[in-house]
Image (cartoon, rainbow, N blue to C red; front, top):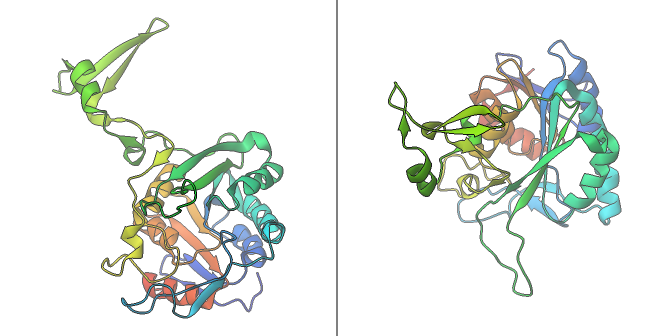
Length: 298
């Protein structure tokens, strides 16, 4: 990272850097706080045109330009993304993971790109996120979801499968049919015997959340009626990022968003007591994030 890159910080040493992540990540990963257990990145989607910051409730995204999303085609987009993904991989700890958030325009090609960078066996799965915006296309099926690809730096990456954020209630039918037993603490449970071994499942603990997440609506972050909205384009809801941080980190973990946009990843990390670093080359992003998080020049 060039020493001239403007930096902002909070009282705990978490950072926001105004720079291209390709230039910034090497030094960030080598500093005293060490590498990152989670890299979440929500890059441009190769959608064409530019995106602006909403500056009043009467407009959508016609304000000051935040970033351009034109790369001269898919090849140009992948040429931009590839070396940056390699830098993100190098910034991960051995227990770290990358969560790459894209939509249908480039996610399939980007998965092939990640397979080459991380190694195909390091692909850990994907999350289908349903923003809840509804269908618009009239000439065929609308794509109403986005995809988050997950890659571990090694097979032993952090994934807190038992965190309450990764569990959901059992269906009412299942509860009424299978959870009739009550233990000494008054908790309903069911017990199953698998290969001669007994497994107990508690009704109040819920079941593991699957790979389709439709309970983190985008509207929370994109309507000026909510305090969460910053006006920055393509802002993701805080509930989504808090779930990801809880899934992929420990309390002592460090979180990185190398294209941090509106700063939602950084706020989620701070809310959960994790240190963080954010990078963006957009002046509008730096302005929004430093104000949102109360960061000061470092």
